[in-house]
Amino acid sequence: MAFIGALLVMAGLIAFIGDRVGMRVGRRRLTLLGLRPRHTSVVITVLTGVVIAGLSLGMLVAASNEVRLALFRIDEIHAVLADNRRQLEALQQELDRRQRALAEATAARDEAEAQRDAAMQERARAESELKQAQSLLDQVQGELASARQELARTQQRLEKTRQDLTFQVARVQQLQELGETLAARVQDLEQQVASLRRTEQELSDAIIALWGTAQRLHYGSLVYRHGEIVLSEVITSDGTAEGARESLLAFLRRVESVASARMGQAQGGEGAQGSVVRLRPDEFDESLATLAGGKGTWVVRARVDGNTLAGEAVVVQIELIPRGLAYQAGQVVAEVVVDPSRERVEDQVLALLGRTNELAIAYGGMVTGPDGTVGKLVSAEEFVRVVEELRQMGRPARVVARAERDTYNTEGPLSIRLDVEALSDASQAGKRGSPGSG
Image (cartoon, rainbow, N blue to C red; front, side, top):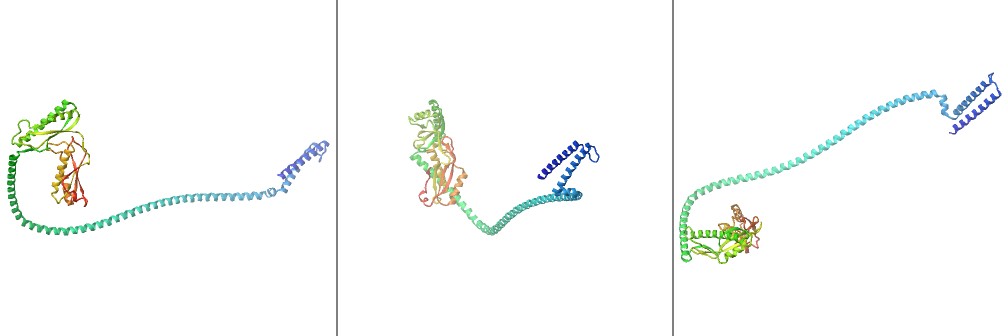
């Protein structure tokens, strides 16, 4: 910057000096080389400019090496520049080639990486499939080992079965021979049993006839026992005295019909003549008041008030039981400890069912059927199952009768299930006996 400033100052001074010289030459009207003053002034001005340009160039050459090179070695510089340009173009072409090669190498690398990733995924999938195949192989080998063990056991059982079959065949042959021997003996015994049965029947008939004769001679024929129910029904009261009277009278007529038929059968006829049912004087009125004051459904029973012989009047009491839940599902109705060593298991289970029927009538207030029961209680299959279970146990056990479902006294029949419960050794001694209440 200082050099440029000095150059500008010097050019200004030279121009100022040339201008002064030109002005003086013009005022004095000097001539140079025979030229006119005006032309002489122009020549001086031009020479001043040349001096300025020369001095400026000289100062630049003296001050800057680059200027000297540019002025005196410009052709060489152009040659070098041209050579450098050619080299640059060659280098640029090489750079382009290498960039294309780099791009191709990058693309190849990306493709190789993609192939590598795909190969790694394929390897991972193959390893997973290998693990699954190995697991399946282990499972199959385990199943094969189990199958071989089962086959060995089956073969052992088959061999034992063959041995047992051989033994059974020999045993059957022996039994056949024994059966042939016993067949004749059985035939003889059957003939003896038939003869004994005929004798037993004859004796039984004679005993029954004698007992009946004795009863008639001493007591007469017993038609109803004390507390026996003549008839049990369900009636609905509308809460009025008139409706209650009609329902109660209709029930008593049916009681009269049932008692008359039974009395007639006991006397050997078709039916008893006249009224055979008697009530206490206030029995009907009390029952009527109860029905009239309680609207709803009732269980009404006619129960015998004392033993009744053939020919006697049947004195009954009327029982009224309002509708209610007799037993909840699972509630114990009755239970008994069954001891196979004392008597037949079937008889003890039947005694439990009889006790269950009695308790359902006495405490449950259940309506009874024409046969005096509250229902079938259990099925034949259930009875056989319990008997077989008790026989297999072979020792005292408790049999509990439980209601199968919620049962109302007016909506029989009562269905029960029988549960067999083992007794502890300490409690077996004191719990063998007749059915107990639930």
